[in-house]
Length: 409
Image (cartoon, rainbow, N blue to C red; front, side):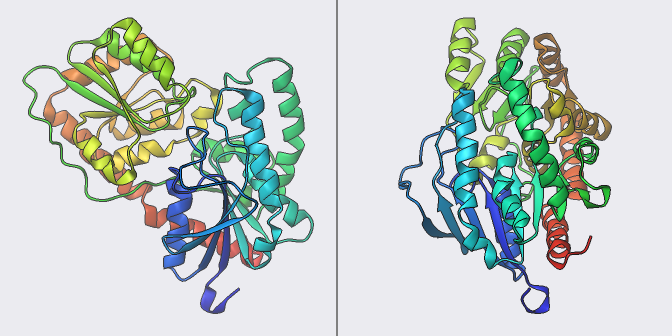
């Protein structure tokens, strides 16, 4: 390690700006601001559309500087379709190409892995098995649950093959990690049940940008009204078909705006047209700095996922962004998220994949008096400040990286 506790840290993540990847980007900048030397190993940007971004051309190695952090890119198979084979090629290609960059790890004291998919940890695991540097896994989605539970792979021989192949490797990756971070209480307990030593399992909530709460620019409502915003990936797992049908069924002052891109967007647009849902609108993705403008035009923000057991133990980053903005939540995410929203009284909840349940929540939202909405928004920001702040999250990860680098727990 360098002098006075400063570390040399390699961040391994399949996603990094200009892709929307706030957690690894914030962490890299935050650690660099604290005096650590940070390098990033990532792929060529293609998420969420599955196409390489303009201005980039894939080659064996590419180096650039983003916000003062040196970023190394390796090639991958660009895809974000509903094809199980292509999606696994996307994950596996980054795993293999990043594993060839062992040279970058040799100059590090510790490796941080942003594991939206666990295959990002293949290189650090392989390096550790062969005597390389310690690594810390930041698990965002439980594997193999999140892939075998998707519509791409649910049921049949594909599910059994993937589960059988990944299980032993996942257990080895957990055991060899210096620390394993889960993003929700249920996820942490599940990781321990799957082989993570209890003393190396840690809870660190994801965070979001935390400027001042966003003031609304909407005029006072003289009749029941709920301007509901969904902003983010428009994929199969977000269960936005239920949201479109629920908004159409709710009617009575409810309007749903879906901002973003993804594989499910064309189907959702066709569904809205088929239903004649004039109260459902679609918008293109916007950069993070423009999100306050969107939140200012919303009465509520929707956080939704399908009813898959793995999602009961996750807290999507979208929730933190909504709480930080000071916007009441409407959520269909079960488990930890639903309990959090209900207990803190920061929004409304409904059963996942229930059109009638979500339509009722939309109607209730439209009928709530402004004073109750303001109270939800205030409590949401207080919840963010106490549990989900960027500084506390980065500090906790910094401590875990330092302990792993020193070989302590």
